[in-house]
Image 1 (tube, rainbow, N blue to C red):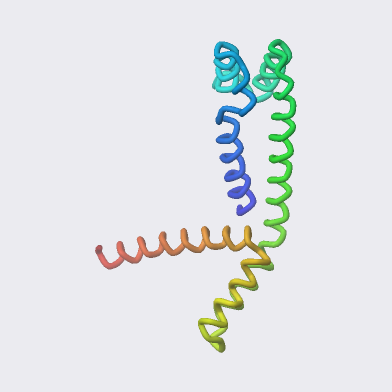
Image 2: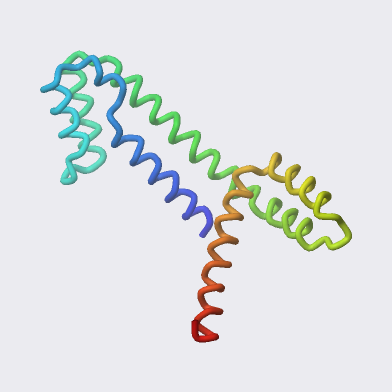
Length: 151
């Protein structure tokens, strides 16, 4: 379930990144740029069809920077999926360590903060995901508690 949530988040980021105007379009004539953006944002085309049409557009207009742009996007996506896999694999260890720190009552709050800072340095992505899940759980149950007492 967590992997699905993280993949969805990366997918949303990738979609947003692709909807921004690529920097190589700054050197392209206005009409050619409009043509590119029309193809890129065509909701009827499949992703594969968009890729094919944009590659043809780049060849037609001799925009070699498009190939580097696509390579860079693919490298970013590959890195993101690799990071997702790594984060998901580390998640149980990070969650267990976090529970241990939070349940330890034989420490001061300063000790707890040091331990949490150290854990954050080791598992930054995992702890961010745990924080999101924890906050969502708390928000859902606070709302439920309010309903239970008639607020």
